[in-house]
Length: 404
Image (tube, rainbow, N blue to C red; front, top):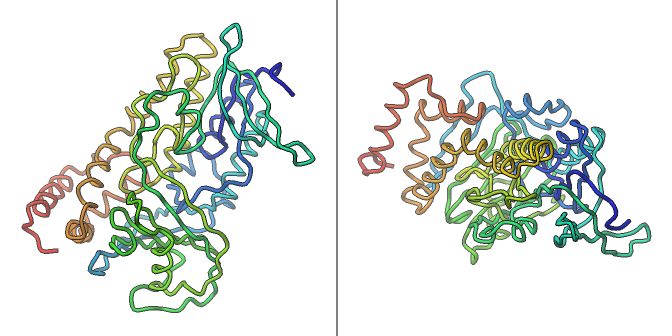
């Protein structure tokens, strides 16, 4: 199986972004190869908003829990309840099952699946891309192989090899490093003085011993839970923080199923394509929401937009089409990313500010607009009075006029 193989599109990476792009392009009749490293599961809380479930036709059996609210803890252990004030819910998915279902949906649409690890690009005499990768044969012996492609979608994660080879400056994106443990939840979880586990609630901790500059979490997944944290401080021990969080929440004795860690990008890349035949999607493009670390919805949206851009490029031959993926994404979501980035850079920088941030989250207007924006993936403009009230409350907190 050598470089005589030619595909319209090679999608590198089979997470939500890559699998969505492969599915969409295969449905359009394009020859698609989905190249994915076998066995990797990304550390992720697994939250998906209702708009994702609707837009991408996610079946009910993949939703392992329905969350009706959140609870957040300040550095001083003050607790704020944030119930969803409508009839909606936040869905929770298990990434190993969810991602595999997306990859299989792409295969059923006509994409070829292949287990392998991308290594490098080259070009033949005509200038066409050759994609070089490693894989194992049926006997388990590692081999190096090559295929040709009219275009490539790089969806191979935060430290993307495709991005680093094709897009100048891709290696300079800042990261938060995330780590979580998946534990099996027994029917009876011991209550503690700090928290009692609730299978229908997400718990979030803005406490320096669990994360000095981001947050830690306990997210329900039906019969299991994700217990994790993130930090950009290289000297901070994520494993020790999760161990301490498990003790604090009464989950230390629960069986650990697996442990996972990975970097999470903090902002979108300024350029997603090479102006010739490569475009990025998902974590490779940096589309993880600042402050929250949410990535599944934005990954799938980025994958869909990358697929649209590649389809237009293949149809017209106009390389400018590749740039439309980023333009369309930022037109819709850029303002949200900008606001969340400012929020993270200001409110997360010290325990004093995080204490004020949690106090502010107790406000009903803040909660309602937060949930509406999250669940519908757009800034809510229908209630200008609430926005004005929140502006002045924010200002009071910023100036220290409100006691945390």
